[in-house]
Amino acid sequence: MLAILAAHAVATMLAPLLVYRWGRLAFYPLALVPLGSLVWVGLNWPAQGQAQRVDVPWVPELSMNITLRFDALAAIMSLLVLGIGALVLFYCASYFRHHDGRPEKRLPSFAAE
Image (cartoon, rainbow, N blue to C red; front, top):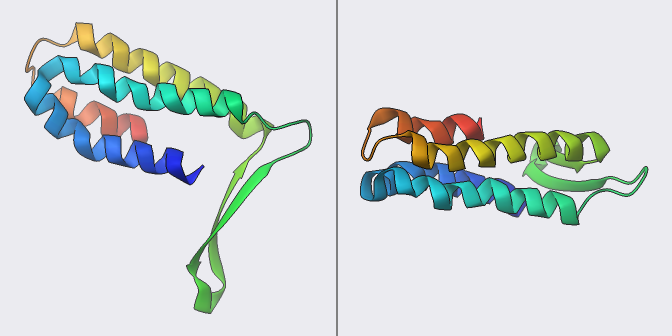
């Protein structure tokens, strides 16, 4: 679960550089991140009543943790958001002109929000 979040963060940071170098063709590899996450959701679909949970200590001295939970509702929402996100990024590769500029650089970070 943490690897999926890290992959999206890395893709968001690399997106402006990739778009600068490859132009609109950069959207194809960028779309592979939500597509790969979608595959992960399908392979790790929670069983009925079961939820995956990851606790990451944030400030142990104050007993503060970051808790990530992956249950049926999270799986359905992830399926929806990641599927649409991958489709939008694939569509952007043909929609934007080559080196169109600013919108290309902001879109992956918008999708990550």
